[in-house]
Structure formats: C-alpha cells, structure tokens
Length: 115
Image (tube, rainbow, N blue to C red; front, top):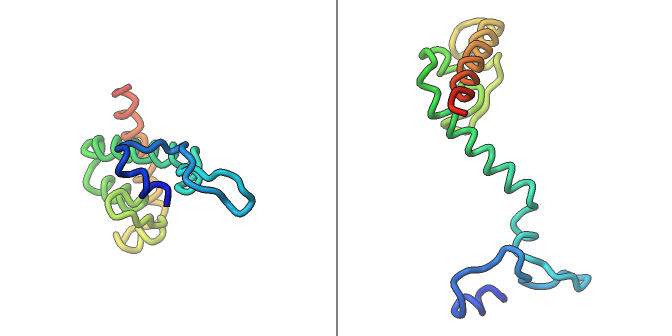
C-alpha cells in the first residue's frame, strides 16, 4: 500500500493525503478511511467532557456519585437505565431520578465555575 512504501521516506502523514483510489477512480484519503470530520470532533469533545466530569465528581455524595457513574457509564462504559439502577440500589426509580437531577445540577455548577 502507499503508506508502507512512503513510510521509509518520511515520518509524518497527512490525513488528507491520497492513499489510493476507489472503484470509480476517485482518490481516497486517510480521513475517508478512518471516519468523517464531524465524528472525530464529536469523539474528542465527548472525551474532554468526560474528563471534566471525572475531575469534578468529588463534589458529589457517595450515592450521587454512584448513580451518575452507573447512569452514564463513566468508568466502565456501561450505561444503565434508572430502573436498572433502582433495582441494584434497592430504591425507587423516581428517587434515582431525583438523585440524578441533583447530582447533575452540582456538576454543572462546578464546571461552570471553572469557565
């Protein structure tokens, strides 16, 4: 492939540099193969937001932190519904909702103070 041939010649590769052609004869860039621009930007923004939340999660109580971690999958990537969380914690779904709402308000307030 083109990248293997030029790897010995230079260290940096542009994501816009053509790496081949499709069946119709159009050039294909590395960016076309990886993903579209918006998806990359969205993924980076999401990671940055997750880091901000992880940094500020210390302002929450143990129960609030537990609900937020389970609800949004902060540490294990597994997002759970309010019903699933309620069943695991032995509380009602509406109480999970109130805890989540209170925790999100605290996090938003802490993150907005940073800006």
